[in-house]
Image 1 (cartoon, rainbow, N blue to C red):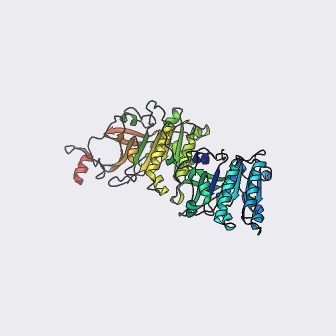
Image 2: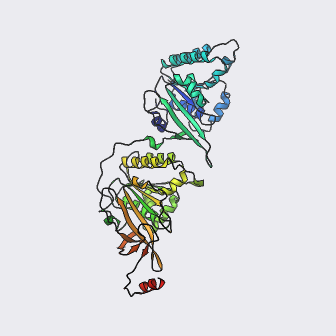
Image 3: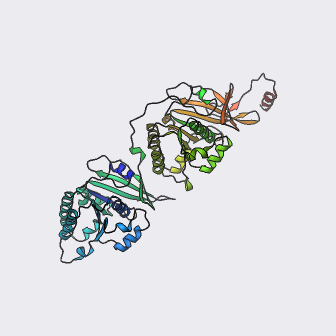
Length: 492
């Protein structure tokens, strides 16, 4: 049974099995009640309604008032598709020593009304009214009898970690879903984890959960994906940077992941725009993910070099996703879902992320990042797209890559660096790595042109500091007599 949340169904391993018992656990404020009622309003029909039982929770009028702000709530569905039933009076009856009246009520409704889902909020409260032995017997009776009706029995409660080990609800459950709330400045995080889902293979890990105006949204943890169906590679693709393809053996191998390293202002973003513009020229659909520049800023920057990105966006050939990282807080799962959904129909052929270092810094999840990045590259490649990523390095002095140890994940590495040339600062480009492909190892001059952006110039014959031990310097021959050489020798 689909929950109405496609990404939640993915996490659950396909949805909820009819006739199953699922425990939805978590501390106050994590979104249990919202999620349960969102599922009820989404899956219920006039023929097979959803029945929502409350024990000693807030009055139904207050409950529905709180739901009024969510888009999934439909006041017209109350009573016809979604029915609320309060069990408080039944539990307060002093003559009741067991839960038989409650069991008979729920089971009777399950068979008479044939609901698609029955929720009890909260089953933890039942512990206050009967002994543990009586509760165990009652819940076993309830779960086994409701299962024969085909309805999903959803049990909500603010259970602790100890309850997970000893609570009868968890031993009887076919599925256990735990919501969490992590205090983290400047923005707290909510999560969802599937501990158990009998008969299927749920996605492991803690998945990001947001409470929005539309209700609950979940973002599957991308490390849980293991793409194995890789499409066949096509011919090499053009970079869009004049002169660079010749250094890369004729272009970039299709579906490769390429990272461009360099300090601020050296031209990395302009290289992204050129790579993107080339894809648009080839009729390809492209995705640009930016953390700093807004959509308007990127379009204005592109127009200065002769590229009309606004027109490409208007015809849906270009998708620009501006993901602001205010207060240095970026949710990696939200970013991964954005990219994954954009690639779902496999129409996008080029993906640009600008920049990787900024992304890692804002996410503040250093231990997780290597596995996350590996999975991200796999998802992009499985969609048949080529990835172009930038990453920031130091501006002066020896190169220090902030993502040292992760460069092995990329097929190709291109370095853009500044170089001291007499009394001027120039730019230099070097193809450092290409996996399974020949490439030029030399350093070449690199310029930013008024039209077309970056372009590759002549090869440097005499450069010191190539391996990052010092600042790059163009060293003229000692026998030269030109002014630049004389000035350099005088300075020495």
